[in-house]
Image 1 (cartoon, rainbow, N blue to C red):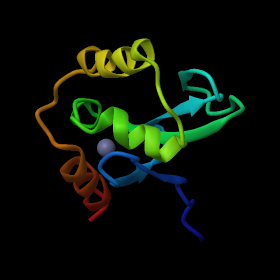
Image 2: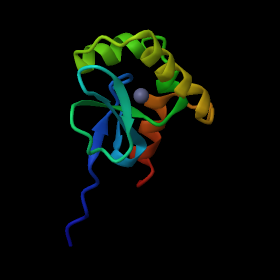
Image 3: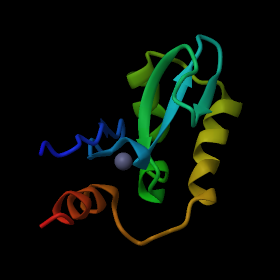
Image 4: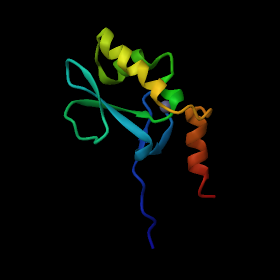
Length: 106
Ligand SMILES: [Zn+2]
């Protein structure tokens, strides 16, 4: 039997790889940035882990701007940074969490 492949994504901030469900897609439509939980909104997208450590990354805005070839306005940048506060602090840095996820099958 072939094991079912889990689609993976890579975090635009910490470069950790993990199953797609561990990420939220961030979309730049050319004028504004938005979160795209459905993963279907048109525009240039990047994936960010659902871990607080990703969103709390000091490089959050510049790294996402680079990934999306975008220039965020102040409101967009503030909204992205505020996202970290909405996430539970699990005390685990994103790359480590991803390593734990990959090792869980052993
Ligand atoms: Zn991350």
